[in-house]
Length: 455
Image (cartoon, rainbow, N blue to C red; front, side, top):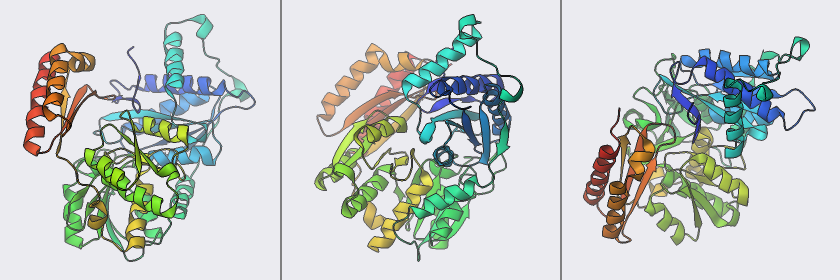
């Protein structure tokens, strides 16, 4: 068994890589590891999922594993990942499990784990869970899991009003009514299909929802935050003030202006950072972003007197930085935005609400607000590989990266990063012109392909 946890939980092709047997083992191991921290009561777990078909199968396995470890289970059904995280804290649960592969295609699925309070697990706890699974699978008698019997077996019940509490929490965080704004929201036929339109309407916006009819098979299928063409077209058709696009589990949000221009996570973070600075809620006048954020964000924040702290790619690393220094805002270019005052993880609906609140309070268009960031041309190539480490560490690849950085000489940059969830190496290049960025990126990508051909 290779390493289970990537940058965002356990993920793979459902019933091939991520089997019910593995889901049961992960759930049982998580319950045992997290329960070791407090033996005063049986652990309580919150379990949610996105609407993809395999979620039903994996939910049954996860619930069985948790109950088999003596944990009581609250099933919340289809709900965004940040909704599950919120409810873990709201009901004072010991852990949470979300079944979702986020923006991935329907055949994939994943397991995201939350500790008490709704926080993502640190690396060392994930390592403990992996080690518990390995030891059990190897038949190590010293590592055999305790299996309660009789009345000590965990009980399972539903939490039918979980979504209601989550939406109430979201709407209660909005600093300004959204009256007068018309928004198109693309729900990706995912976990946000009911709660996102509801939250935006309750906050005062006029809402046109698209791709909000999940059938278990159509999640992320040509829609959502990875496919903006349809939300762009709907904004133009309905003469909306903006469009918002979520991914399958609604932990991210991207936007389009009234004219259909994309507004990415970097621009959204800049808009929110300025709003929070003006309100006096941007702790230490600091924004946290990953190394993938565009150089234009760095320049805009510097001009505004806002310090930018960089982390590795992955919202978990943004979260760690926010928690360590008590900071108030962070996120990723992909649309994961974290506001710790209101959420323990990235929340796409929360992001959409606060973005619109800034528009309403400033009486400004999204295009005007987003113009604070001038993005440098950026090219990202996802290179399929047989081995992520070999593809990214080959001497010829590293030499090409060094040569490219010398060529750009401070006018751009190169970032080479193995994916944490897929057999890909990501090649990202920023430069003064799109042509230069594309040329450099293709040159490096070709060497990555040669170093580790995809199987």
